[in-house]
Length: 273
Image 1 (cartoon, rainbow, N blue to C red):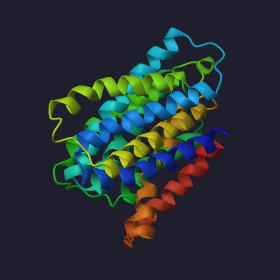
Image 2 (image 1 turned 180 degrees about the vertical axis):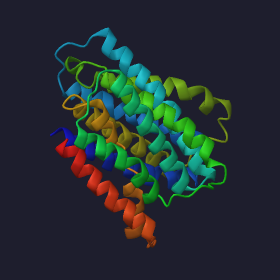
Image 3 (image 1 turned 120 degrees about the horizontal axis):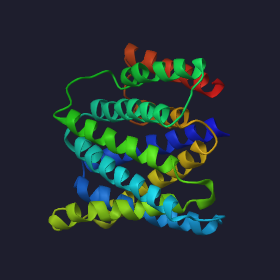
């Protein structure tokens, strides 16, 4: 079940990035990010109440809160980058660098992937880059993508340190921490970040989708190596490309086709490893 849960997390994040990226170009990114974390807090708290926890330790909540600090920073810089940079640059920069940082930290924490899994990990980085076109100019979006990647790595690594007995409360604690982290940016220019009701609901739903992705990732990380769970969950950039093809009638380049094939092969290798 571990690989399936991690891939389901990737699907959630792929949809969130696609919808959130479009929304961040139509509304102020700070409002989209802040309301998104509120939506995530509502969903995560509800899920935590519905799924009984055996024993919630203070350490579990602290790890969850630290993960939320990473989430808040990641979504802030990701949405800021998407608001003025190319999605084909910002998303892969954040994903590829986040994968690399997370895998290194996972190994330092004791992960020992098999040779097959290492092959899948090595294949993932260039495949993700090719999926998004391997572009290098994103209207200034690269720095934001790099900053987002550090937050993504912190989000994944810290959340995986929480114990299984804590249920989903670490995710809820993380959403609360993310709201607090993003509150100053949202309050600094309240007139600029105010959203129409329809956009506000969309932002809440985007955040709820991201929280669902984290819940699925947490369940996956409890069932397999951190490095493998992170890499599988980080295949989400492939989905915006596919959605762009299906919904926006975009055309795939040869490089993107090869990248999609590479992500498919990496998925198989990581699942076998």
